[in-house]
Picture (tube, rainbow, N blue to C red):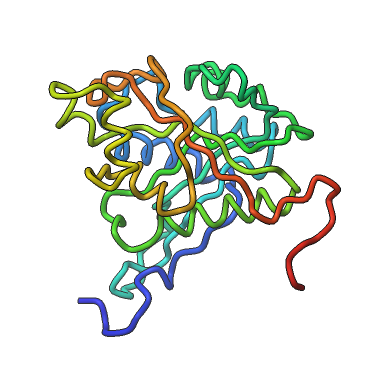
Length: 234
């Protein structure tokens, strides 16, 4: 059992990926996204390539102790926040996941891009409900601020839509989640992390549960200044 008052994530650190983690990151994808088509999942060779394209592309959560404080026999990858910089076209926002992430290779990464495209936030099922997702989102927001980007844009998958797709459209489902009338395991958490919905994306990725729909979500850094001046207290 977890000792009273102990942070279950005390033994978890989030840092840019290292090469040895690539096989574990591939396995994490499979555990986290069982309903996605195999071609939508990134493999070890993708994660190794990211290191060359953008060393900060993959922010990896590594646990050295279990949530109850027991030491693990070896470090374990339990979460990932992944993405890259782009100039996203909000006038023409329609896109597919594989198109934007260049089939997992992140070839569209542009160091001068104004936005961070959020390709993936995943938490090992055994580590969910402990706040790790929020920490991964916070790590990505810190990366955005470090590089002076406007914010984060992403396609948010809709795992909860599977239970409602026979009764309503994806747009209606998303609207009800935004209004608080329904709860989605992913979108609700993203809304709580400061994202807003700016539309829905049809055919975004092969996901049998959500009929390939996703929400277009955006987080705009409230502290962003186009002139690059700092607006936060030191």
